[in-house]
Image (cartoon, rainbow over all chains, first blue to last red; front, side):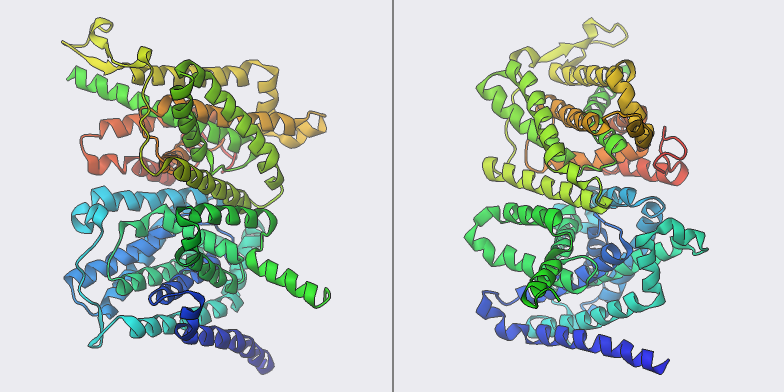
Length: 323
Length: 296
């Protein structure tokens, strides 16, 4: 038994160490590849978002088109806390994540009962519902189209959260998030999620309460989205109504699929690629960067369902002679 | 009082008329091919752009016939060239590839025509108002309504009737309906169902095309409009019952009327469709006219 356990930890140490080293050293070499200050923090925040999304799509097999709902809800809750309660980020972020969890229970309850197709359609719809609520129904609280502006600088234990401090704060959260995700997918619970993906009905017949596992998987994924949304507000500090729109949900879908679903590492590569593409490479193609990205995305879905990770695997097998 | 209720009714019907033309295609494609087409809104949008271009260069008469024909061809090409390869792939892949296509279409249009609303003028014979009080004695005083909106509603109703007639009274329709129920059996009987289904796909896209060319002047013509109409159309299909075409028609007009009658309270009008959808999901998950056991 103990042998199994040490294996367990060994398997985790290497990827986590590599992940940590890359992120911790990123600010030192990022500028040499055309990146700029601030983009690195954004990348790490999106990585957290994409890890959670991959747990849902890659492991449980549910394609959500409304993940902006949790990112945005948490962002608005965090923003409102910073605006009206205090500039301390701890209570603000906790309330943000709690609101994302609450929203996940509601939307999950409504959308998870049925098949995967329903799920994709309905998550898109409920995401758009929150977006239009923020723009019209609740605009007295949310600032409508303008979003929440005029937030004071967020503070953590008397320190202003910006620049390097913000970056390393985000990186530490990302490392923990990645570690937790790796533990989840190798836990019995993670196995359940994979079982849901491969055959929900059969799992149900073995007496497993599938609905509960689906809801839990969905909520966990929403926690990651909420964490990312909350961090984004602390980083900006500003809440855009765009945080709730389908564009944002679409972005995380594109990133995760481009990188390779069900690998955890793939979505991170996808995040890096897309944000780098959007902010650095887009200089060479102007307004059409999204068109190019859309084409890349389509080609990936058609020819490389496993995303970049599949491509890396293929290249590796070519170089090592197919072994 | 009678007047305002009647006008709201007309507006609701007109809104429903556009929804029904988009959602019917969605429901038809889903019911036959089992594919959720996330690019369906983009097809509607593409047709609206074609409508603007053709009506300006060749005139409205040409636009009315050419746009649906072009959309039929595009639908056929899309099914033959792309969707066909995804029948054996997981549903998520189908959704992803159509979503990618939607983005590509949207970005292409944005690139070519800019992000702003294109003006889309109605033809001479469709411009102006109809004096409804001349025809309807129960209206009090002077009641006018834009002529084009009445035309849109009428075209939509005719399209819906034609589609149902096609499915109900022709051999083609019989095969398609049978294929929706039990494709396996039909294949065993030696019917080339794949070919029929690609025509169905093209018809679905064509109806969205009719919606685009007639609805374009009423809605907006900008690169975001595809997604704006896709979301309610999905909800229409869910509310009506997935796989049920009559349910889709019913739900379209219910949604149109609900939006129109709540229009005086914008805070409610913007979310009424979601409220109805939540109600349906909670109390009648298979939709208004969804059959038990079908696509539940």
